[in-house]
Length: 416
Image (tube, rainbow, N blue to C red; front, side):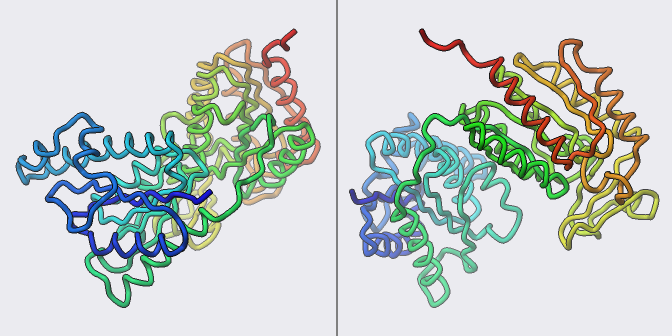
C-alpha cells in the first residue's frame, strides 16, 4: 500500500515552500495530505484540510480567530487553538489509516505548534520538522519524543539555492522513512526500562543480555534528562511493564542544580502504576554540567573533585550533605509506590567514577547516603547490601534476578 505523508503548516505565509515540499513528496511516490494551520488569511495553494476545519476540530470558528486583536495574547491563543485542532485532525487521520508520517516547516511559533502535534503521535511514527530554531536548545520542541529536527539555516521565506536543497532533503528523509519495511515485532515480550550512563554501562549491557535471555525487551535510557522523561512517558503509556532504575542521577541534578534534569515525574510513574522496580543508586554522587566554563565558580575552584567528561559535559562530585538530601528525595518518591520495589546497594562503588581508586571514590559519603536512604524507606521496601561495585558482573546478575523475581511475583494470575 502507498504510504501517506501528512504535510502540516501555516500555508498563509509559507505556501510556496509547502507546495515545493508537497511536490517533492509526491515525486517519491507518497500520497500527501496537506493540512493548513494558518490563521491570517486564505492561502494561495489549496489544502486537503483547511484551517477552518482545523479550528473547528478545536471547537472554534476560524473567523473568530481572524477577527481578533494582533497582540501577543491573541496570537498565542490562536496558536493554541490551531495546535489543539491539528492534534485532533492528525488523530482522526491516523484512525482512518491516512497518516503514516508527518512533516512540517516552522519558525518559532510554527515549530512550537508543529512539534506539539508530532509529540502527540506514537513512538515510531516518522516525524520530521524543518525549523529555524534547530541550532539552539531544542528540548522544548523534541521533549521525550522521537521527532527528527532539521535546521532550516535560512528563514522559511522563499525558495532559493539554500532553502531548496534543505526542503528537498527533508522531503526525502520522510519519504525514506515511509519506504522502510515494518519493523518485526517481538510479540508479547514484556518491555523493561533500564537506566544507564557511561559510568554504569557494563552493568546495563549485562542486564540487557539477561533480560533478553528471560524473554524480555530491555529498553535502555540515557539518563541525561531527556532519557528520564522518555522513561516516565513510556511507563505512563503502558509500553513498559517495569523498570530497573540502575542510574538515578537525574534526581541529583534536579536537587543540586545540574543540567540532566528529568522533571517532577522522575521515579514516580512506575510506583503510581504499581509496576515492579529494582532501584540502584548508580551515579547518584555525580552532578553534571555542560562545558567546563558553565560550572559554577564555587564548584570549579578546586574545592571538590571534578571531571571533564568531554568538551560538552563536566561532572562534579556531590558532598556528603548534598547526598543526604538526595537520599531523602529518592526515599520520598519510592515510598509512594503501590507496586513491588527493591533497592540494591553496591558497597564498592555506585559507578566507575566512584569505584575503588576512581576519581570520585568516597566510600564514607556514599555509605552515608545509602544508610540515610534505607532509614527513610518504608519498612516493607526491602534493601540488599552487596559487597561489589555496580559494574561487577555478579552484581548485574543479582539485579536481573531480583527484577525477574519481582516481575513474576507481581504478574497477574494465569487464566484457567
